[in-house]
Length: 393
Ligand SMILES: *Cc1c(COP(=O)(O)O)cnc(C)c1O
Image 1 (cartoon, rainbow, N blue to C red):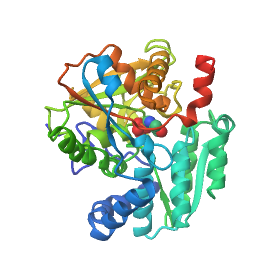
Image 2: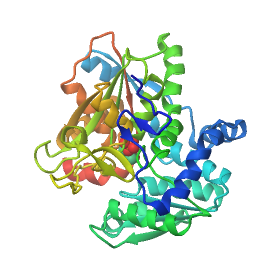
Image 3: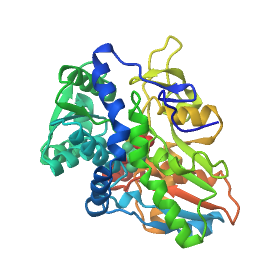
Image 4: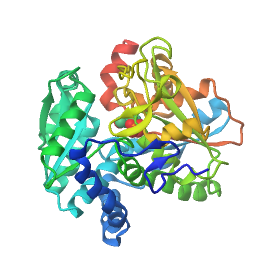
């Protein structure tokens, strides 16, 4: 069985491109060109140069001594939190802005929920001097004032989505409407391994730098070419896809995906898509999503904005359905405690999304010789207010 995308844009039975006809020319233009553009040596040169000099790659692979001692196994942290803008998302937005330039586009649109992807997009648009419009639900704009300010400082126009629940899915609808109306000059930067083919594959390839570096760094540090396990939190699934990418077809590497159980899987306030989801179509892709019995998308909930998404990308739906990856869900409380533990044991304040990945060590046991790489997807500065409230700091 293959775990990567096939030539039709499917991962097993998941993926594809379920889009309105008016969007077809835009998606088709991207599909026909993305592999060739990415394979071009001048593209790769510019991409690698920016990752190095602007983003700060390679990010370290750090042996977490005290955490390893506590859990009786060898834990390495892939430090995506040290990237410029504080998370892995910028690997993708750098790749997509270069893609947009090669496609001759002069205008960028994006959707954002909590604002992290909006900031990563506004950042690369400033870098390249390209117009940037970010659609964001009116409610999210009110909830995420610092990220709205960041986007504005970076020169982006933030457009409120005022329909429906005034959150991420409404912002996505607005972005799609914009793209339909501006097919010639506009590229839509999607922020995770979601959306119609070729987005999940393109984003996974841009993020695959993470597992590429893990291989080289483990060779240097442990004299091995692969870990026993890779652990990552999953919202849409891009940091997980990047850290799994070069290990997908090697079943001796265990893949562990950590989802947000919110207040508990069966509490009605959760974002544990694999446990609760059924096959359906969201954002142009056939995948697992949380829905009611008549197919309405359920409002997800997680204390971490980045995991608060009702679906997962099609790669992860396939990794789940095929049993290739192990899916574990973690509650708000477990994640918050694991985040605080990482602060005390290693001096690293993680994003709350990332804290979910660390919470598995309480229940999922590893042997003392196992090499476990945790993808530390982002830093916690953006989450201080949530930490302060939760722990009464
Ligand atoms: C956005 C975000 C996530 C979730 O997105 P994925 O596409 O699942 O990686 C996880 N961690 C951090 C720090 C984020 O900002």
